[in-house]
Length: 175
Image 1 (cartoon, helix red, strand yellow):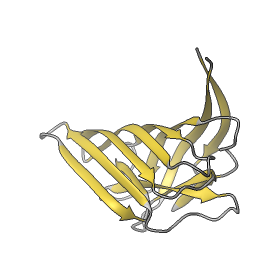
Image 2 (cartoon, one colour; image 1 turned 60 degrees about the vertical axis):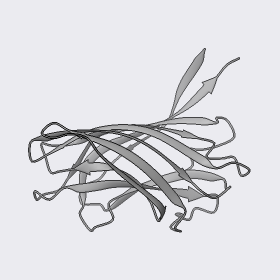
Image 3 (cartoon, rainbow, N blue to C red; image 1 turned 60 degrees about the horizontal axis):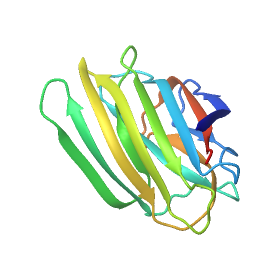
Image 4 (cartoon, helix red, strand yellow; image 1 turned 30 degrees about the vertical axis):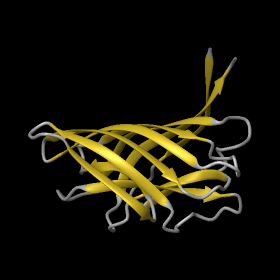
């Protein structure tokens, strides 16, 4: 049996490039569920990618080339493609566009507060841009054995977010 506990809800403000969600990872849980819904861009028709970085115990965003990910993308108008990278400065999720085309994401993060383990992720995302629906499924990890207390959602190419909600849950697994 499992229990899901809401730890934090963060509203994405207008015209922001990044959102920090701090003090959500602790020794209380080994698994966390992060949901992002209604995430949209301010304006324009060029898609934007959602990225994530961890925040360490001293409150600094981890920007080193220590992230790795692999993603399958299934577009409504073509066959699937894949994207992967090693040694990047962020975890990449998927693409979003301006209102009314938003995005929703569910990510599971494993061992973020365990300094003797890597931090792993599994995620799924649905988004749309230029009237094309895209489904994503991905995995990733941060290749440093470190302890993290939070994360940052960001857009790295200078396009701003205009709205959205980020919820972080702790998942307790009972024996």
